[in-house]
Length: 254
Image (cartoon, rainbow, N blue to C red; front, side, top):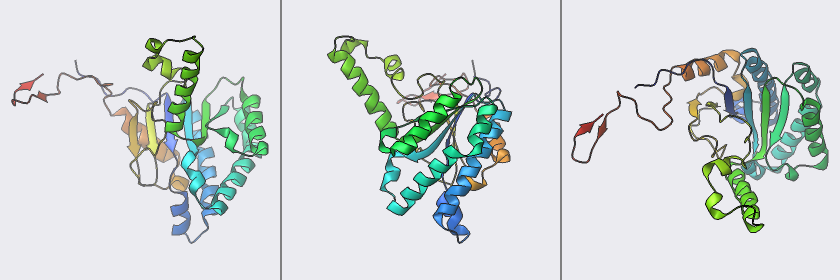
């Protein structure tokens, strides 16, 4: 039986926020201006998703590879990250019942930045509304490897046997284990790759790429992505009756 088009909105949206630097260069501005504009865009998308009753929003803010960028840019990003965590908007999100949390290797950040991340998580931990996850110093390969390390430790302790290691067990040890897999991943800026983001979690995620630079991505842009998602048929590896498979001999089978 053929799968119907996706009904309703996605429960979980992940976003690769790309194009801040190119947006700034196109306007003769410094890269820092692009990152500031990108932070404002992120805030607006959080509110737009909340209005649409999206349950989970995961934002790729800083990858493990971003440390390779010029030192000045990295310092600017860290300063911006800290300023965002100290802004009144965090309190507003809290008042809107939004839960904020972070995934990634936060030990790489300064003690001051880590403290503010922990404070934000503690402040919003009991909120029951949309869950906004910020991926910072995050990489999909790091995520899977740290899950494997934790499982290996349990095998060494005799808590688990090798035969106990299944996809479900790995799922319990990767980031976002307590959230549904992303239904939709949006990448802005024109690139068409996932750049080491949520490699495990994206097994059946629908991918949406657009040319819009992240600072220009707004509520209308979000709505277009969601409408595109609604028109897709999600088979999760299955086959619909209308699909045809051609064998090596050329015969078509249903």
